[in-house]
Image (cartoon, rainbow, N blue to C red; front, side):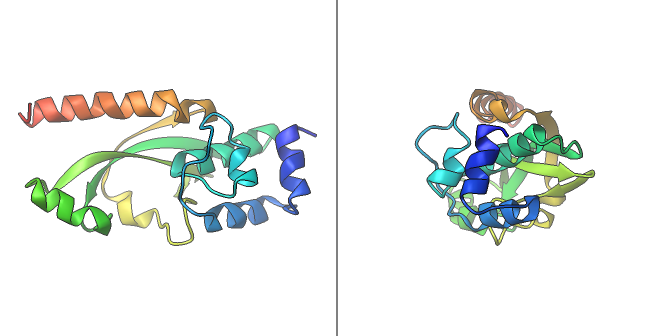
Length: 159
């Protein structure tokens, strides 16, 4: 049994659905080492990237092949991300591109970042998606988002 699967089972989590429920209930907070997805379990916290990377890694280790890890860029606005509303208004922007990780299970997008997460909130605002492997949530995600923002800023004559 892979060590990651063993640590999950040792935590009392015995099924895929129980793992999803456990992850969704964890607070949104970065853990101490972004490259160690097992820390989502031991530190009991994680971001959209680390939580979904952990789930994908477990799926891969256990030969669950109908699950894809997706890096999406979406138009973040005051409707789909209410806490950003004032910052956007202060900047005279209606929206801005934001990177977000989620899973596609049997082709259906699912967001397990928190118990309140609902992919439908951003579904119509997705600009682009790329399938990634868990290890890409660290550097690749950040670089991809930075490059997208550079292009967006240039396109909108903001530099």
